[in-house]
Length: 233
Figure 1 (cartoon, rainbow, N blue to C red):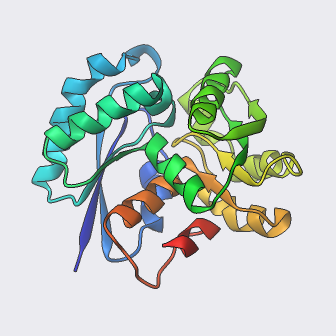
Figure 2 (tube, rainbow, N blue to C red):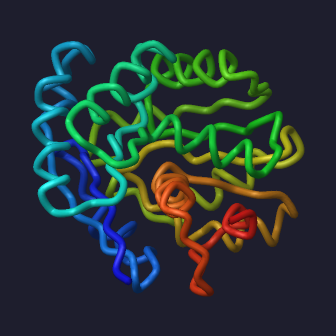
């Protein structure tokens, strides 16, 4: 039986289709819709909610089993209260199961029983620090946090995976799991090497959303994307 996952992503994102979509199992089909919500189009969560509800309803029309609001920084921007409002809006719009990038990240880290996180982002220091506060509020220690202040979507998605590999390896020794934040970076392809070389699990925003979608739909097939977290399904 084919399962379907609906992804609501920023209009500027170029990594979901390019990198993320191909890692879904063959019997799980991703469907993508975009909202203008980053850069000059940044909005508060309350201002985003009508568009989130409409996008969710459109993905429900496509018979999606799970709908995910997939933008790391936006889903964490107003803390757990903002996260809850996004989930409520998607549920009201008819999503059989709803998630955000932030709920997916927490779910993946809980599945790994991780309590301390090394965080690497392409964001400014201020946005990175906001993510630290969000993770702290969810009971996670973040002894290492490095934002590379790349300046925008073009730099995010054009930074080679090899650069992110070097940056993840540089965080060794300070945490029991590693997190590369942002849905618009090339990260899934380095997970296996990071886990092999550091001996601990790594997650990315895109990988965590795949994990959470599969978990919510009760998927248990043999084809597993990269990362130790999928062994917990």
